[in-house]
Image (cartoon, rainbow, N blue to C red; front, side, top):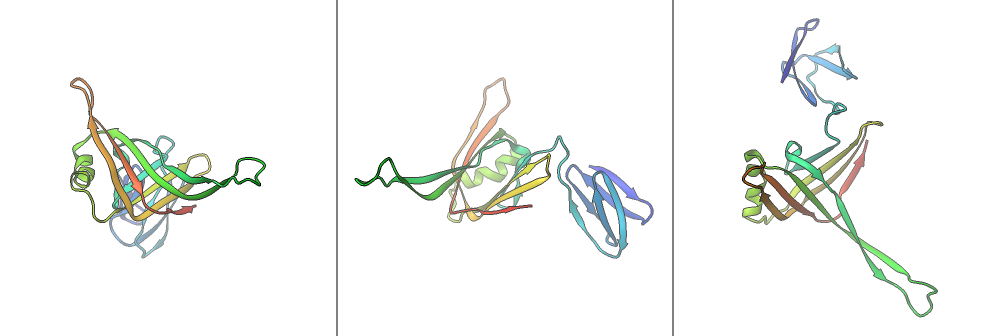
Length: 185
């Protein structure tokens, strides 16, 4: 964590890769690009910054816990149920579309913190699904799209793999119940 001090206002600020936390109340902070401007006294704020060019383009939140740092690949998938609607009056094949079945396969490098967060839910299957959120960020336009399933995520498959002479990996597939709440900003 990098520490910075805004001397004009006398407020201590802690910075990390993707956020700035004002740790002592009393200053309103605005950011633009890599600049911090103190504009008004008397208001406490926490500002989440978009990641740098080297930062992630995807975030994964499982049950309120950001597991992005453990994830190497994400694939949000929707299989749309379709049925054959062709009848004798049809001049070609016709289809109807139904509901989507969502899943979220994830892979990464195994770490004890990841195991503590995820594997208890695989060892003892859930009776109440967890909230799952996936953010996709388009760096060139700084647009972000969020997909959230409130109490809709259940672990379908979980595995840990590795070889004696290599890093330990993991794989996980979450099934997501219902349609997501989708927001774009």
